[in-house]
Length: 140
Image 1 (cartoon, helix red, strand yellow):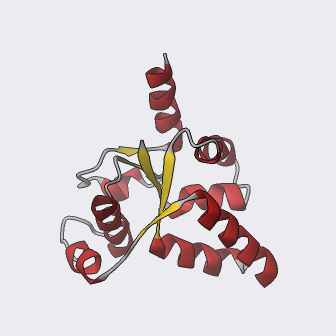
Image 2: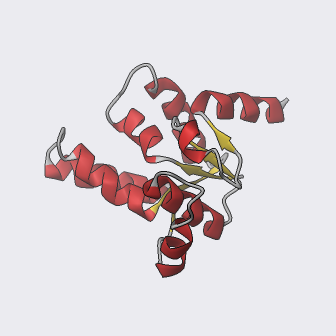
Image 3: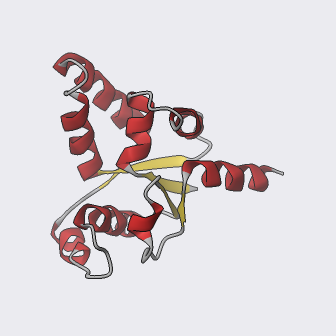
């Protein structure tokens, strides 16, 4: 199962943002155990690096990025993805880029805390808690 993680879910873990960190950490542990195939959008990597350097040292930020790259596949962002992301269905360009990168990478689900940003998604969208419930129901 291929799942693209939105930037906010990864930041919940890296910055230990409560009350969201537990669900996000649980999902990352599923990626670590290869129970799901986790994807990050290429722009997520750059955004995370930029944001965490505000809280951590540059060395720590690089270590976190290296860890993410060892765990996750990367959904590339190229000219085609960017052109399709100009789609007026999405009000936020960043969400549209993430969605188009997910489509081109063959992702089956997107996990985010920003459900409203993905109302027009052609890929099923879940919050971390919803995704956990869905995954647990499949295991039964």
